[in-house]
Length: 450
Image (cartoon, rainbow, N blue to C red):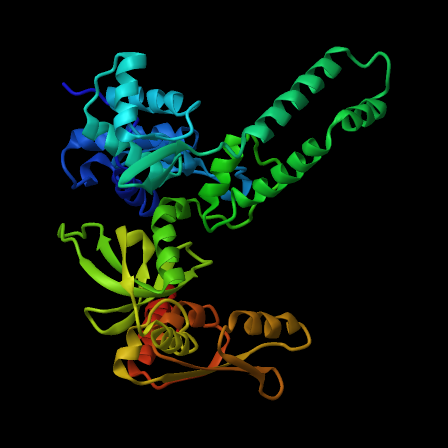
């Protein structure tokens, strides 16, 4: 029987399960529809290995229920960074990793043939040349090796370790600090000890402390906080200062996708998008031109504002639905398409751009009642949350909100928050009014009011 391993070969595999278990709620064993029950057990244990301290269990009428419990406002690091540290390797992968690094450590440049011969001469390792070539190409793409072409030959060299000086400075600092603390506090008071310690620190150490403070923020703040975390770990630093009141850990699962999107935006290029399988196990592959990224501060979802080439329409693509992105050719009409997208964005409330297909803007207006002398802050609250809408005072104790949008249904949850205060409500979309009055009727029946 195959044994369970925490490591994985492909990161997208764990993205699928983390998306299902963490983002959409931790499923029970009987709710798992993908593959076998054994697969569920393996993936559950793997996720527990990443988030063990945050996994909780409870028992109810439906049996054992597993769930994630954490206060994201108290996190000093994103626990999902661990997912990027669990890649599996074959024995050849491990051998080649150390052989190649050791071989190129003292050599300026070598080609594939020279490296293969050197592996035999120095280590007695007869590894297939094609396998060595693939590993060299992989490490060049990762930035570990530098590759250049000369006279139809590809030459490889080891990229300089930019963190080496910082590590040495930190090691010396920790050594001096340890010796100082070991001597004890018999000679000096606490304040004098601190002064002596700081005076003994070099100018490089001061810069390191500034960098540690900077990385403490950058390793938590998206986008691409994964890069900040990698630098932080490489320099043996940690975050000791920054906490975020609203923090969405699921963002880190999309960092690789985000890099491809930013590359396409910067190069004004077309993306080939491959989605995760839907409920019917169907995979979509289509082409889109990206313009900018939109992030929801309510649920943490990320969207790509793009032009869907196959459909011929502007749309917002959920990033957590995307499995892979390939950046293709340049879009000749990029600036024109982007300008049209920005015009659409001015008349949207959130990420729904579907209403644009009707070629019609809808108007929404409502008035609310408030006690101006006691609830003056409500006016400012309404203005802060109005986005691209307009808020005006209408006589005594009345506030009016007016907006033009492609899809007014997006405003429904927000409008319902003022349900007890609304005096007038008008909308050019009959479906909006029907839905609002239907919700109001259901609430009346629930609370038996008239």
